Image 1 (cartoon, rainbow, N blue to C red):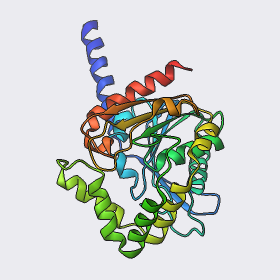
Image 2 (cartoon, rainbow, N blue to C red):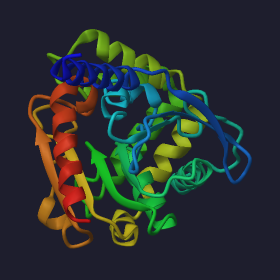
Image 3 (spheres, one colour):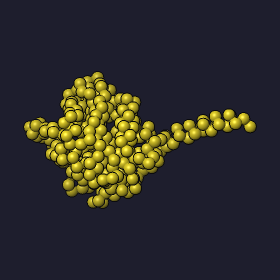
Image 4 (cartoon, helix red, strand yellow):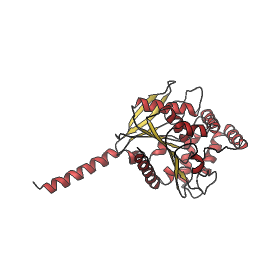
Length: 291
């Protein structure tokens, strides 16, 4: 038999199997948090390094629909519904960012993950910093997605009060407006509607408690105590509510760097998934080189 034919056939088979593995259905898991709350997550891939993806306020694991399969051939990929979101539990007395970090710790330990990079969007960024502190030696880096722009940023008290008052008065209307305002005007109308509908479906009391706690978080302390490299993939700006990335400021508190994506709002992984995935791969390569 022609050996070249066998070699070519083997290569094609390997390529096919790798492609098939990337598209396999995820293993759906439910993990018990420290207080007994159920945390839902999907697990894909078999890499030695695990990417644990954490969505932002009002979202769920579907935020990462363009990344989960794409990174599964090289990494163990875990997408989590944070408590109070998606299929995870809602019966918790105190809703804090620290409690969400505890949930991440529970997931990592339950899945027996030994080397973890936490990828957090928006609220998921601070959650990742706090979780890294809880998991020294296991979490090796944090990658923020349009988040962790400025460790020294202080939101004006009147702005915070106005936002929380609006949420308390008319949650669905206020959340819908927020989703639209966090994207450029020319953004896909269907994406705006999808994001707004998802966020507006959350339990108002939980969402409001979390956003209040998030705004009160001491970011400088969180950066310092995470104890791992922090890399960000942030928006380059050009839309309302844009927060510039203060790289030099953040370097005072952590091993920090950031790249940006142009012409996107607050959701680069959904707005420009191909470019985002390329940026994330580059960031991960850079982190691997630091080992």
